Length: 73
Image 1 (cartoon, helix red, strand yellow):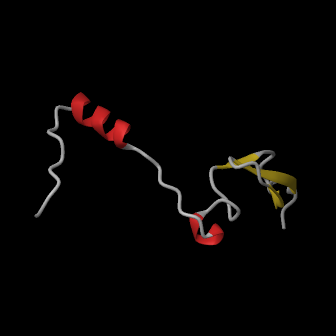
Image 2: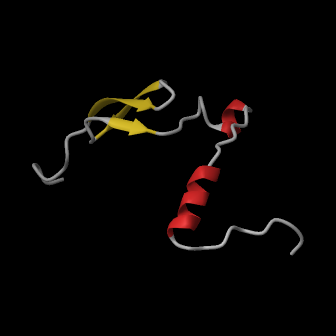
């Protein structure tokens, strides 16, 4: 292996948005993630409903799209 061309690898603490911290090894100095095995619905068994109705309505009004019809297709 050539010397001086490979990035340095060091210990890093990966922090999740839920507050969980995981120790790992990486070339990055700081890693922040949005979801981990502690808060992911598949691993935790708890489903969370994220209400995005406000964002969808704002998008539709901004770009002039009619609201989606709910019913039979």
